Amino acid sequence: MGFMSTPERLIEATRELLWERGYVGTSPKAIQQQAGAGQGSMYHHFAGKPDLALSAIRRTAEEMRGAAEATLGGGGTAYERISAYLLRERDVLRGCPVGRLTMDPEIIASAELRAPVDETLDWLRGRLAGIVQEGLDQGEFSAHLVPREIAAAVVATVQGGYVLARASGSPDAFDASVRGLLSLLAPVGTTQ
Image 1 (cartoon, rainbow, N blue to C red):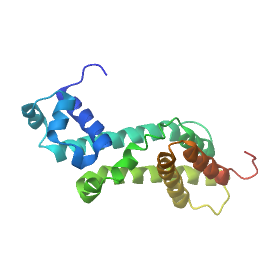
Image 2 (image 1 turned 120 degrees about the vertical axis):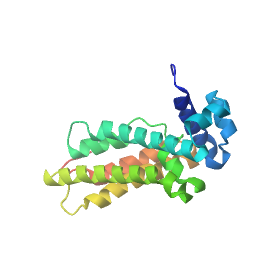
Image 3 (image 1 turned 60 degrees about the vertical axis):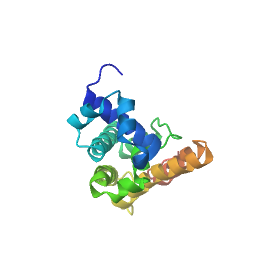
């Protein structure tokens, strides 16, 4: 991990605790202990737990965007890029850090804490819809596909795949969902 400044350590500690315990279970004291920072130091850098949680959630959302863009912004046809996004290496049983935040009632109840989650999922759907549109323009996909709907289906497949994998304790359900969606999307006149 290398040397991290105190605010960085506090943000990382909050991210880990939100992941493990949720918002309610993440106490300022637990954050301080995990970060190895005193109370004075925490309140010097952040107004309090909601402020820290917002920074932590924003960081998680930025990382998800970065990871998605790494495959979606790569080379290849529209199908290949969507396929690379769906098939990329994931810790399936751990789940999606952003998806997990949507399960937290306290985060969803707060417009401010929910905003980075909502914006990131919106960005992802928009990015995917643009790629589907490129594929349509290139004649890759069957003409009746609606980019916005395909994008929503891709995001729902990933998020739902995580839930099914966690429920069964195996990534197989995630992998099957992704393969099923890709076979439905397979470009006209190709065999998978």
